[in-house]
Amino acid sequence: MSFEAIRDAIDNLRDGNPANFAQTVKDILMAKLSDRMDVEKVSIASQMFGGDAPEVDSTETSNENA
Image (cartoon, rainbow, N blue to C red):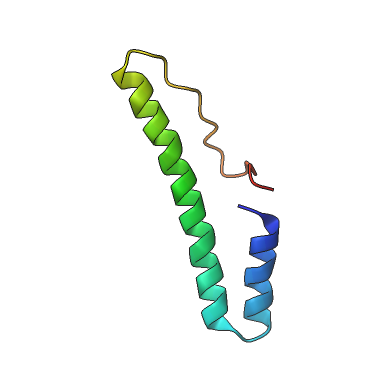
């Protein structure tokens, strides 16, 4: 999730484009969900094959894509 995407969403709302705001927010949430699913897939695969699951930073404030 990038701060630029959040800024774009806010700009769309400020400019009176609620449809673009909704789409931008949806895109941000889908990217976050996809990232989380990838982490869970690795964790499950590690557990299935006897490895240790990697430590996951579950804080909402992490900004991996900025």
